[in-house]
Length: 335
Image (cartoon, rainbow, N blue to C red; front, side):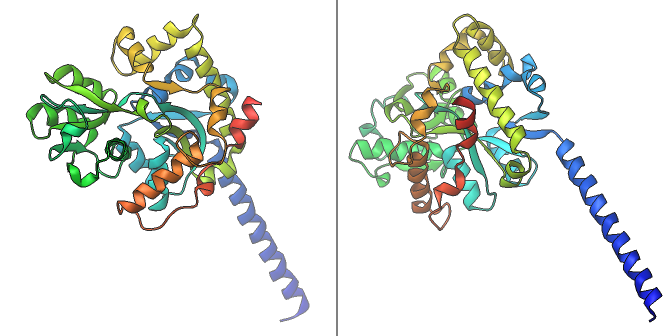
């Protein structure tokens, strides 16, 4: 091959490289033009997103977001399948799906459950101690299971003291009503439905008995966080605008009205649900930041959840909790 032909081939290869590079840039730009897809479900700290959606605050902030209303487990499945950029989840479930393949990073703490996760006793069951030998319906391997174990531990009982029965959370009120189980573990609105509809039902233990056991978060894929960090920052900024609107006495009624409409409840009904969810404002959330053990911090609570999942064979290996938490966006916004 003479020098002229070699130069021509080199030039053609360069041209091809530039073409491929150009197409890659175009493809990347197209991906960035897609809205952030976030799954959210029926929990007060996540229904709160509806305020920002209805008010048009995401558009005002300059971020294109598509919130997808889904059943909770369905939303986790969609995230695992790569159909979502982010999902509203408990901190424990975020680690569980990460350990089993869907790596994720928690970037925002919405709230901690402060009474809305409830162990509901059926007729004739008046205390945790009275659950001995009885059937407890709970979604095994999820955060309600951890709440159950916590309640048993505090009452000097082991898990073997009760007959754990795997029951989907949304089906648990009917399971209790039918007598298939003697108690259930569920979050609002399912726990409230059981208390309302099952004669003689009563709360035996709630997440208010162990604040920080269950943190509710927004967790996202590492790839999306790396590629669109500035967009996620805007999402966090809108979140704290939402929280201020919910907590401000002058605007709270409107916020509750918006949230209640999302779940087909009357505003006065939804107001009571807010009492069991400690939605964290910019100052309150700081208490969850330290990297110390115990339920009072996101790190500590997540470590406890991790140990729980390994002990119950949800997955095999203890996780590095640091890989699952990025507080930098929150810190930038609230400082």
